[in-house]
Amino acid sequence: MLRHEWNTGEEFCFEAGGKLDSITLVYHTSEREYRPGDRVVWICHALTGNSDAEDWWPQIVGPDKMVDTQKDFVVCVNMLCSSYGSSGPASINPSTGKPYLLDFPSTTVRDIVSADILVRKHLGIESIDILIGPSIGGYQAIEWVVREPDVIKKAIFIATFCRVTPFITALNETQRMALRADSSFLEAASLEGGKAGLACARTVALVSYRTEEGYNITQAEKDDDTLFADRAASYQRYQGKKLVDRFDAYSYWYLSNALDSVNVGRGRGGVAKALSLIKAKCVMIGIDSDVLFPPRELRTMVSQIPNCSYHEIHSVFGHDGFLIENDQLSKILEEYL
Image (cartoon, rainbow, N blue to C red):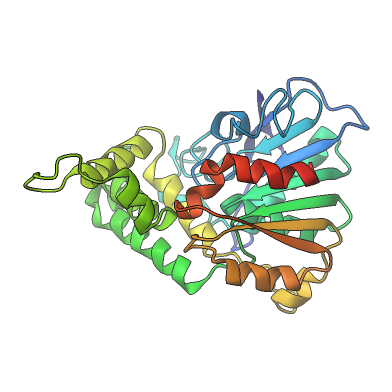
């Protein structure tokens, strides 16, 4: 996919207050210009993902793949506050000449969708044929189909929900506590701050993305006589370092807070009323072992959307099953793509 960087050149107001004279948005598209009449497939990425969907979802997105970047016009926008180029705490504050860090405006998922809409208009796209949102990308997709019901024709939500649950907020706060426990994070001297806290936060999140059975299968000790079990511990340390090498703690902090803003019914008379506004043909795909977005909750949401069906993937790997169970996912997506 082709990377673009665009400065809006106009004031951007944030839902929680605060504004910037303009924002910069990084996005990827198919390697050609949009042509009116193209089938548009828009993908919203997950928490620490980026706008190059072909990079993090190679089994699904790419030439001759389920989402064909040659036949379709595929778009993915890097979220506000991410570490991959869109405006956020890593951006330079023009009044100080230094990164915003903790001085960036508080950001919600609705702000992230507002930025997506700006890119849609910038590209001259009047309607989106298929909107796909896995995980936190699904938070965005659900908000978007309510916000612009006449723009989106079909929507595919994968392992996601319409309102943040207390359980997820508790997990988010546990990760933020890990960041705050790293004294260099609150000092906010540079983007290097909070690395130890970020590594810890990532490992907390990772446990929630997986399952007991998944860990027991993949991280069991190879030596039955080992004195101290370390394979799973080593895996956690590795995953923490892996994120630290590509992401900054301040972006993670802001995105974690953004997740706690998710409530499609806010200011719309409640969740059920908001979901009733959706005109797109929708499908929800759940994962039977997902502790973050349990199927029972997804089915409740599906029942409140006028035209929505439900499918379920079997996996021992929990929430991360949407990145692992590609055969099952492809079989479901084929019907809608």
